[in-house]
Image (cartoon, rainbow, N blue to C red; front, side, top):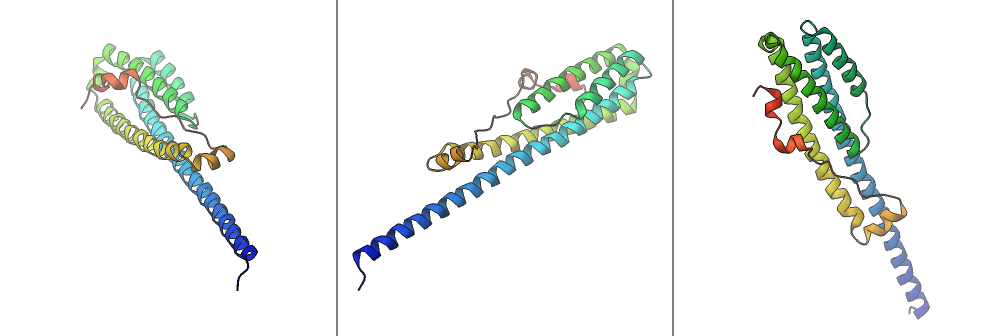
Length: 190
């Protein structure tokens, strides 16, 4: 009925088709996971920019109390707001810059207690706290996406395809020292 050569040909063809299917499936899954990581970073960027906007509003509120300090901070905030987030290192750099500027604003706040008493100050600080929580959640989502992506990139046999297609392990976002200690003392509101 079937010759041995024909059966070998069918088996080799089936194995080849299975290998091609597996390669394509793996490539698609890698792209899917990579896009989820990029989307998570984009969400962090959106939240960071919103947080910078709220901080700018606070700097503007401080302008009537401390003109020079507020203008300097507003210029710093404007420069930091437009930074594009592409990697975990970019997020960490933005976090450090935000903590520095917020600390400087808190110093202005301490120097001018009437600023803290204003309703605008309290409203702005509450919005900053809300954005801070959004950033925290977006960071958790990114790290979850990065975990899934990294696991897929590192496990065999998908690691072979990932290597050929130049997919590399993604860095995780880490908490800075201020986050580990807790930020509530900076915010002054609960």
